[in-house]
Length: 325
Image (cartoon, rainbow, N blue to C red; front, top):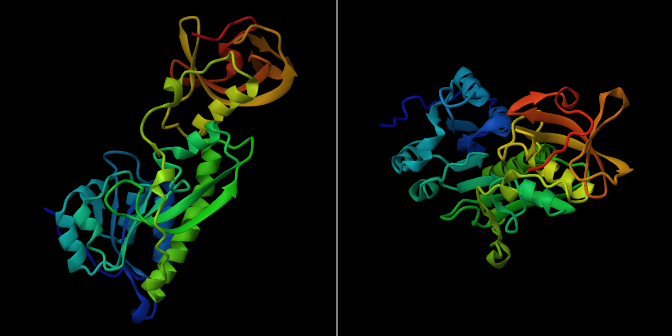
């Protein structure tokens, strides 16, 4: 049974009681940690932090919140309607969701006085769901963005409060776009909290045009299998859409084979050199570089895995090897 016995004030900077909010934060990853630190510095009261405990994954956020003396619950508690009563007892004004993937119980969404808001790393309504930024890279989008929206029943369907767009480049990876989403998302979150403290009615309420909505689930593009008989720019784009290097990708690394070995292509870069070799052919270059032939040009292999273990390309592949199914 959940209790609120650990609620209290945590030595935040003094603010006017007239504008001091009680905020519940549901969060994960580095973005969630940065959000909590920003809230601690804001002078508002963090009534509760919900995140994955250390026994399920490494959690710098849990450790930080524990050191700060915040009330902690596992993020999965948002599925339990009983949490709504705790929110009401603690006079929670805002529920903020930052990179947590648990679906929040509907009664909990209705409990905060001002509302529940989610930071979504994608421009709604066109890019809803999971890992949408990878799909945007795959589709050669030139613009992407991040959205703060109200949380209603239905995933990523609530009215938009704030949104910002930014340019994508031909070298962007899922990781670099994700970092930009974090920066922009935290800035929007700061705008939201400031508006909620001064005048909640000023928070924009822009209904989404759901005829433009596309939802991305857990399907991995093309099953994660790489095809070398495509132009080098397409192959490189496919790899960049998966690439969270130096961190693991939620989609895994794009897969290919060299004989009986499974090869993961983690990071590539264009060489600009035309190729007439059969697609998938390996060539070794001075300085230890390893190139792979695509339909029209050579692609530099920068980081690979062999049977799931990261190794330097030059130690695993030799000139004349052929990648492919």
